[in-house]
Amino acid sequence: MKIKRLNSALALAITLACGSAHAAPLLIKAALDVAPPNGWAGVEGGTTGGSQAKADQIYQVSNQQQLLDALKAGGDDNKIIQLTGLIDVADGHPYQSAEDQKARSIVKIPSNTTLIGAGKNAGLVHGSLLLSEVQNVIIRNLTIESPVDVAPKFEDGDGWNAEWDGMTVTGSQHVWIDHVTFTDGSFTDKNYGKKDGWEYVQHDGMLDIKRGSDFVTVSYSVFRQHDKTMLIGHSDKNAEQDAGKLHVTLHHNLFDRTVQRTPRVRFGRIHAYNNAFVGDKTAAEYPYLYSFGIGKEGGVLSEANAFEIANLPDQCQLVKEYKGSLFKDTGSMVNGQPFALPASCQYDAHLSAPGYVYRIEAVGNVKQDVMKHAGAGKV
Image 1 (tube, helix red, strand yellow):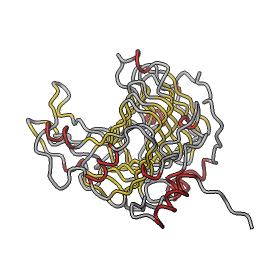
Image 2 (tube, rainbow, N blue to C red; image 1 turned 135 degrees about the horizontal axis):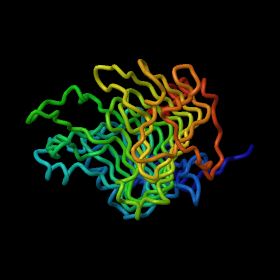
Image 3 (cartoon, one colour; image 1 turned 180 degrees about the vertical axis):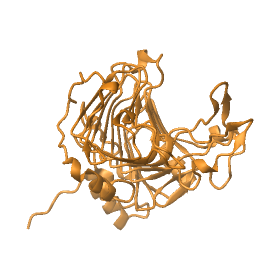
């Protein structure tokens, strides 16, 4: 009978758990996964996260303090942090001001880390994950509820704007975000009030990828009920950091009643394949605006995506031009019809294929597959 050799980290964790007073937690199998080669996170050396962690750098956490302690331990050494249940980053103490929220709500992820939910109900509320100037990070199997800004700032001509995103990837390379559910949760846009005659907006983005970040894959994740969903690229003036970077793959994700920015991109090259987009132009809450926003020098290669957008006047409204012109679609379907932009909204289709091997799923199967497999709790 052949015996399969376990990954060294897993074998050591099991040994310690069975025979040591200082036992490491038993690893869930998915904590050892590395980014597959079907997206940008899997190339140029790949993304392994903390998969090679030693036993003393494997953690199981169930509250805010345990999470923060595990993240700090060992600096950038390989580490695996397994979340059990829902963690309140505010630790039961609501934020009292902008300064208080800034000081307590940001959860900084170090390099060479795998942060993963160890069950179906693991996640974070009242906090923002920050990957800043780090390398080689995996975030999986978590539900992240959009933080609510307690003190939005007013901008002349634009109204109230919130500060905090569910997750921000800035100045970081080799990141795999997989089976994560981003949601506005119980505080949806209908909870906004009015202040000084303007809507008091308390949500910013769900996921921002910016400031020279590169080699990122977002897969089998759910983005549910949100306005400004995903921004890739910091600003039109940030070419020095962003030009030639921001290679991001989006595949097998569900964008469910998201208004816009799925994604909005500047400078980067986005490969979006086999994603499902569900929305309604006339919805009372979260009315669909567009999916792909093409910003300055940004480009999106779209392949075999499935769009179900009720009350869509024409396909021009799937793509919005923000000083950018690079967009190409192959094989997508819109409300049962082939994706075909009218002559009134054509784009420059000179986009190269990505530098990795991937398999395109038949577009007719995409929504069913994504609905079944995407999101937290389905690893």
